[in-house]
Image 1 (cartoon, rainbow, N blue to C red):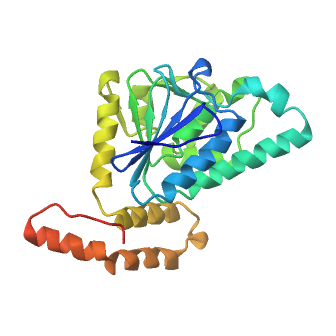
Image 2: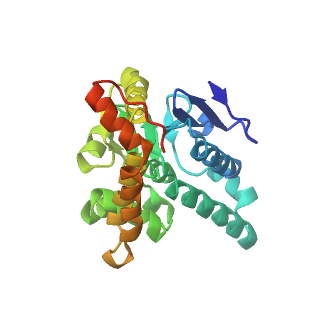
Length: 267
């Protein structure tokens, strides 16, 4: 296992067996994300994206109380109270959002405990969300007077639809894991003692598959969610061609004929 050296102890990053683990390590505040953590997230994503040995990224919260409970509001008085500070904070948040958007590799959220507000927004950055039965979800913006940017709202609408999104925001209530599953916020619910095993098994399965095919699927799904006039169909076609002309495609065909497990290289 390889560990990254980061500027804050409130974020952890490890790499092992094709999986990059990103851990929100602020359990005293239910893993609320602060300024320094956001800066570290940028470093982690950049490292994982550029490491060919990392095939899948998993993000999780430290401890058993929360995935992420939102932004670390305790920092706001010192770091987000003047117009200039607010501008700097929002620019960093935008860079983090862009980094998540540009991840080409599969991203899995391993969720336990609270997943609220900005924490739910973080979970929605993932391609797949696996939660345990103790998980709690919600967006308490209406109890705080907060506004949510279009990008964040659209991500929720794309996932659960406009009616359910309105319910989540209008009521500001908490939803249990079963409710979150039924509305499509998460992919799967397991018991607490099975969460890590389930996520590792899923990540290992994905890591064995062809990276170019997975990147193609992720790219094209993202394009389908854009308005029709904004979809880059040429880029989609290029991604398909890249797969069909790859060494991995040859390896996949050969392995199938030889009845063995393929050894994909991502090229």
